[in-house]
Length: 585
Ligand code: FHN
Image (cartoon, rainbow, N blue to C red):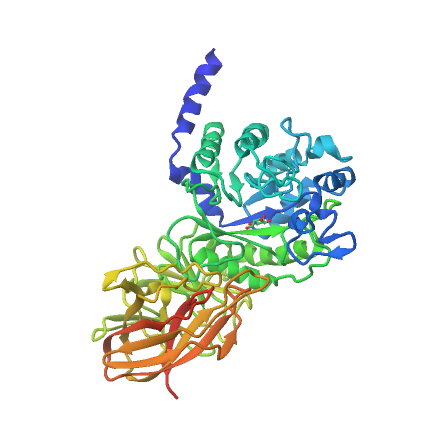
């Protein structure tokens, strides 16, 4: 009785947990490990001698393997080399703070002991052990949060689950599947493995609002502090937004969000996928995502023997080497005070400090445009002595513009990302106007433009994979106000992006657009003149179209508008990303 009295207030307090409290560890973490592991690691991309080019964990669907045949894989699943300590250590060494493992993926197989379905690792495999239990204990020991991926709608093993139309082409009772499998299994996951950081729902498909709400209520009831991922479905509000797979937005998003991403091109292990991303590229993506206010959930796909592929371990260790020196600019940071991307890199911040993550070390002077705060000190994060770097602040009254010049060493201290700490007075504050950069270029990001339709404010979504607009309405226009310091004639470079699935990116031009500025206007048909690899969005290239010239007579404020004239009927829309203005040669 006495114990109950002590416990009860704790439970009650937990129920009233505030959103900020629930999200705190996750916001601080910024970097997590995704683990896609299940029976699909046995075929590893190949079925009956045929190689399937798609992602490995989808082999049951792609090869239309009947349940009875696929189930046989369980009898071979014996990951004897699995070592929970090593898994967690691999994540920890990389600087990751949480692990999200597939407790049940679309194939319906549970990687934990389940009373709700004997299609699980303990009851159906020669291995016979609950490896999630070992992982949970190890995460507790090493101080990482354990989270569970759970495929709530797709279940190719169950007649009432969604999406297996080769075994179960007829009607199904989806609610029954939720009641007899999903809810009991979620209950097991949330009651038998200690505190769970998050339930990572995925591919909601046709789940209704009521059904999604039932799952949310269950999670909240069992563990109020557990975060619910962005893909629950049914329009039910969750704790954060999940971007598309490997999709990195091209701007700051000032809400909680996360990018799930692969190390090669698959989630579940595929023996022939050796297209590994480099540690340099991944580290830059991690910094870029943190700069935009998001978390990076980076995947490994263990083998059927129970090992994380050595390539993945080595790549993550290199990311970890950078993190060991620089993690201060990742953990617990907030998004850049600027909404835009910079050609040189990006910025994270903590109160009183900006971290400039420089990917492209400048050949000459380095300038930061538009920061209004007074600077106290500048130094390299990797320098333990914090030896001050020389800097100069200037203010141009005529254009109301602030410029910070930093004297950087000739050579980049770190060829991946060199981090420069700028200590400032007060909270970071930046100019509202788009500024001309010291190299005289002016970047007009689509996301910072003002969208209008028939003279009224409109919404233009920049949700195309690759970071471009999903622009299909020819009545919408975009405009930007910006300041010019150096008058002259400028070349207009119009940038669109590829989009579509990562394996087969698509792009369509042919749209006719008009760019106007102070009485000048030119019409251009969007064409693929030059393709550029985008290090911030590796699967989707940037496509450049030269769109004429604009003249700025004198320094001051200008406005440029982008107005579509003709949109051909096409599938992908006008995937506009930005306009670059550079001095004409
Ligand atoms: O279909 C799944 C896929 O297998 C994988 O789990 C990814 C991870 O984000 N989610 C789904 C596709 O978006």
